[in-house]
Amino acid sequence: MTETIDPHSHSPRYGPEARRAVEAEAILPTTAWEREIARGLEIGLPGADSIIDRTIPTFSRGELPHFAGINTFLKAPYVEDVHRCGEYDVIVLGAPFDSGTTYRPGTRFGPQGIRRISALYGTYSFELGVDLRESITVGDAGDVFTIPGNLEKSFDQISKAVSHVYSTGALPVVLGGDHSIGYPTVRGVAEHLDGNLGIIHFDRHVDTQETDLDERMHTTPWFHATDIPNVPAKNLVQIGIGGWQAPRPGVKVGRERGTTVLTVNDCVEMGMQAAVDTALEVAWDDAAAVWLSFDVDCLDAAFVPGTGWPEPGGFLPREALELVQGVARGGLAGIEVVECSPPYDSADITSLIATRIVCDALATLVLHGHLPKKVASS
Image (cartoon, rainbow, N blue to C red; front, side):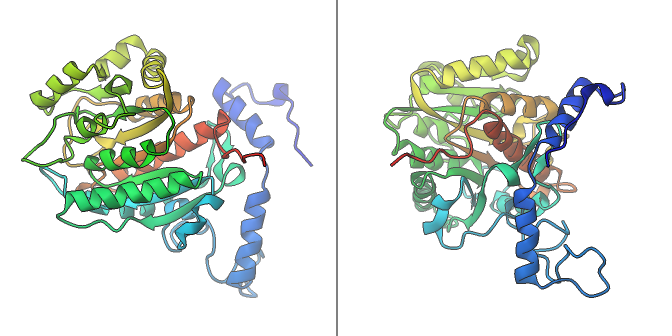
């Protein structure tokens, strides 16, 4: 029986957002949670006789306890057979690769770090009023087999993996990895589109120069991505650029190709909603789909110590989350979160913001009807 709430019965101390959140929770189903409990008892054995709560199995086989179990993203099912990716609305895959790093390596451990701290989360967002477990199906396909020291072979592996996931109809969520993977991930999606692919890119760095240290490094993905015929530079919008780490060759390329750049101060002064509107207008201009590329270093260095090129003056977490929720409202072809480097992290806070970016983007896609995936009529 669905619980009904009289909005006038609440304490006057509820804020407007809190009131909406509490009312939204009342109508969320618990079907998937109940199914998870039943499955845990079936395959993990009922708990010991001394356990009073009979929903607890002997072997951990679900969300709880958060500190137990084998880490997939949000403890989603492990999709060992990738031929089954199409059975899920969302497929998470890791790209453990840092051979494109030009200073501090360690992002090859990014997927592990993000998955590990994601166990801290449940599937329900209070403010957004979404329970991912009840709304969509998420699977974790594990990691791409990248080749240390060989960028081009690794790029081919990443493109093939993302292409496969996208072709099944599942939304790919890529856990990086350094930002050089932006080129092969976009390449893997673009080949399936009838029209253009736009890119919304969060970063402190432009990443648009042709080469760095004579290779296609993590400073170069958007030069090569926008060389793909149906990924025009006019549909690339870059949000958060600034500081002392923007190589001039990349700035020159952006200027010549006509990319759109919004600095942190631009976003603050025009307002987050205006920045979102600009990003959506640019990325979706005559485009069939949009790819979200989120580099954690767009946040102020205080919040992301675990990254290769931390830069003071970036976004606050709540600003970044507001922007990501805003751009996700238009729909996404896929998501990548990059440059999370656990060896430099402190208390997993960089991995935690990476997890939160993915979760908020997915919840927003649910709220605006872009997920679950639509089943084609026969």
